[in-house]
Length: 210
Image 1 (cartoon, rainbow, N blue to C red):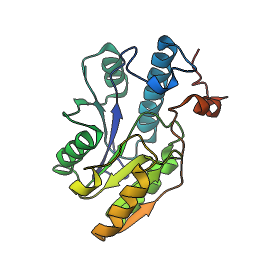
Image 2 (image 1 turned 30 degrees about the horizontal axis):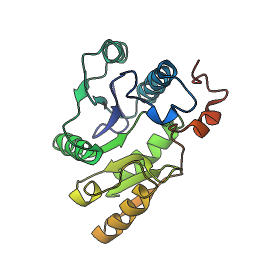
Image 3 (image 1 turned 30 degrees about the vertical axis):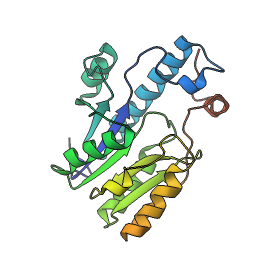
Image 4 (image 1 turned 120 degrees about the vertical axis):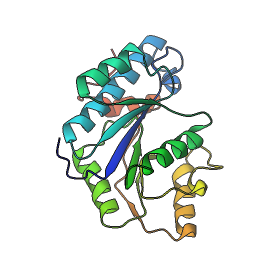
């Protein structure tokens, strides 16, 4: 395949589909089976979005069980390689994955599997910013985190001592980017689907849990 941005790589992070261990913040509105189904739908939706966009190479990085049938089906149907994330907290996993990929790619973009509103245009904005010389590009999340992080280099300060899963993630990351003196681009704010109140955002998308 010929890519528009062949020297960048997108990494989709995804948790293993284990009942009771995914979408746990939805427990007030959904049972364990519904939480699992929502996780599967969101993960598959993002994978299909990346495949259809065809803008650059992409990889699926999973928390555990890379041979799980769900991941194997995605890998086979979309021709995407599956890698297992490293040990540690989210920041340590992201930093290790970014460093590994930047050893063979000029830029890396990390996204999760919880934001179904990322589309080809949003990805292209990120890739274009990196291609034009930005050191970093960030897609903020409406809950104070971020849905996308693009980098041309890695610095530990972007990943160490970050209070993950809180509304301080993006403000603190922005402050550190400025302290590093990096040129960075901020994209439009999008919503993750993490909490019961977020379910209303899925109406009409076909991703609603059954």
